[in-house]
Length: 477
Image (tube, rainbow, N blue to C red; front, top):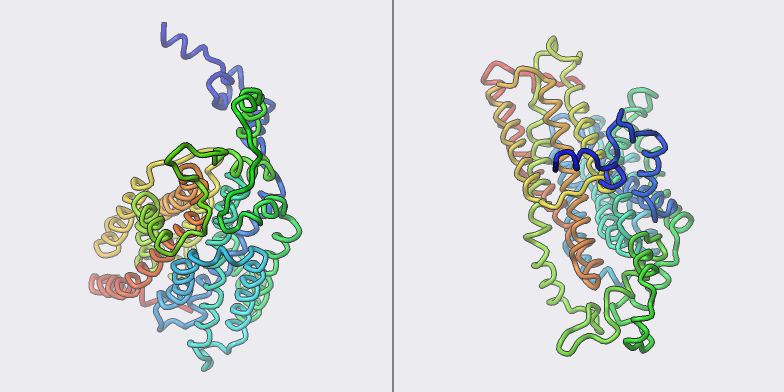
């Protein structure tokens, strides 16, 4: 019967890992399955892109972790968030239309210089509490933000040449930046006992890891092979006829496409994406001329509904939670594991970043194709936590911990799966541009959320005070 037939299938025939404790389960089998899952992944590509994601985002996270120390308690943290994302937003909005003319090697050097200079400027400017200038510190934040914007759109475009494992590694690295950045700042300031200035000076050397990863770890062959195709001009091809195609071994073609290493990926993209001579009346996937500004705008409009809008929505919701709602999600200290109200926000941030890291690292194991469902769930999280902030109906802080962790899972999943969908569904000739252009959505969402956060944080705090919960004004420094 059908039920018995289903139950008798072997794990290998189902394509899934065997259940622990079943006759077919063993460490060797799990190891073999995982090896098959990552077959074709080049270690140097994975390491390089993981470091790209980590270093590109870690300065952003460290700056947000130090927001209270940078501007003092009287300035809304949304001001730091706005300075940390607005230059990145404008960069992602404008740069995709011309940045293809700048070599990746040059971009890496510029990004490193901007990020390091911004961190040094933030660190060396005297503290606001001792009369230092907020404006100079925010200018340094803006320099680091500009570097981050160039880095994200550039590295996402670069994944076009190195295949899906590079995108998975980039996503995991950006998720890891949240944990490592926040944890590193706490380690330097609280555990080791360094001053805020010295902690930021130590972190200012981190951007130099990115050029080391690019020039010393990342294989350069795919970029060198495509350098002559920089302006999307057709690659010269030899003439072939039907007999050549018939004689091509199908197993070789299948192997090259199913298990690509970093060098095969670029060849597969350029040789498999375009017929030698397109059918009559059809254009090639690589136009012979560089796309015009209006053509790029048309390509961007086509990206908005399927990719850019869900990414925009999820970022508006989650950063409105992080910057506007989370600072007011406080409980009586005797009902929590904390001894001070200042301790709530860092743990919320850690749980959020943990969720982001897990979900951004998940694409080799799990793919999400419907991007709108988690975006709407994130909006529901925002409504739930905002209502709780006012009406205080969740009975335990541990439930809030769970919701914040879930928030991170949803946000990270939408981010990495948006770009994975582009890698799979956007035509090859448009893919590099599309990956970079879509990245503007996360920065736009954060900009909008920072404005929302600056408005609602004070009002939610006032609502708490009116209801006899003045804890949001009892934050000790």
